Length: 304
Image (cartoon, rainbow, N blue to C red; front, side, top):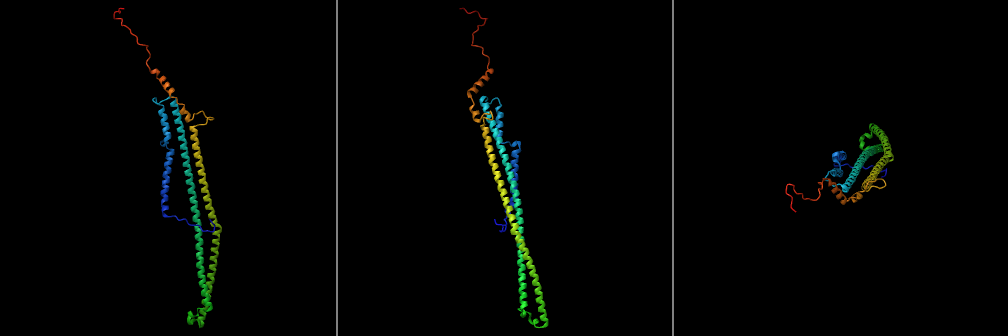
């Protein structure tokens, strides 16, 4: 964008002006809903709710225990950590949205300020040049009229007044009056030309370049801010995936926790069944030996 080019006035139609409050209201409502989801205890993420509910059910007596119960508990713990990672990721994205909104509002406010000052300077120069052209037209008209009076081109229009002494005096006075008006118009025209030239020079050498540079700085600031937020977005995604990966399969050098696959593969159905049956042994009635016949002593002895 050249500094010698006038600033273009960006049209702002009525639809955009009327839609702005509605968009702002919708944005505020959406932000309030997101904030409620992130802060309210009743809006706990569904995966975390399911994980806690499953862990509570695991403590009931009718739930299967043993190696299966331990693997199931470890699996729910993994999913709970993944839910926490997802919540942290969502909060980071919410902060990114706030930062981008603030950047947009600040840049738009600054842009409107520079636009207003630039258009005001352009209009001021245009008004001065219009006044200069009007002054020049008046000056040219008076100069032509003075030249006609001075050369005698107006003798026919003066009638008989130009042939007598009184008419000659009236013509001289008229010429002197036109000369005085022409000189005054000349001075006024010169002053307006000088003022218009000064204002245009300042507009082209100072105001336009400053405005263009300021707008370029705003564009660079917005581009840099957007690029920074995208870098954060990439970092947050990497952190989310890495955290979930470490939750599913932790590094053996740093922790003794088993991976999700190891927990599932550690399920031993036969051992669980045997342990369950052994645990139920105390509920069985005591053993009394094989059935044995005992003759009642009230009966006579059986003859052999």
